[in-house]
Image (cartoon, rainbow, N blue to C red; front, side, top):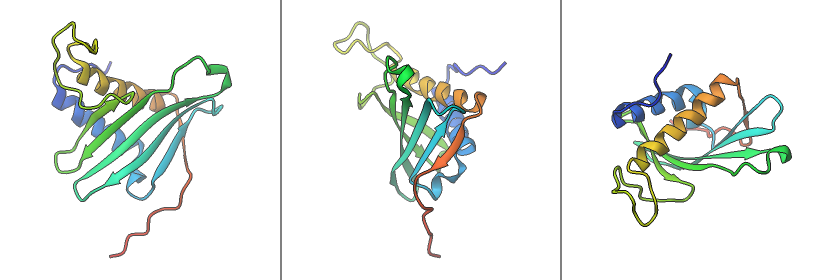
Length: 147
């Protein structure tokens, strides 16, 4: 059994980088990818918000059909660093600048390892898509690279 709740944050970032690259290898040429369940009632939408020579900023958001209207949408922003081969969660549900450690209790009621929990959430979302054989669909045309 795979232990996805790693103690080492660096390993977690590296594993998420590999999961994203494996699940979505074509993010280099598309701006938007939707991963859908077979019945299309649950979707994970991935948008490329920014590309630089060494990084990519991604937005992950879950969407649900009418029968799941009580389930809140999940939104995460992730920065992928190509040179270090890591993916770091930057925001969860719009909360920015999440620090690695917090004293508890605190004014925002973050758990002591809030940043790690956000990265575990990304892991869970990606593994759920793989386990349930989510299918990819693209809403845009591939980016044409000029060499």
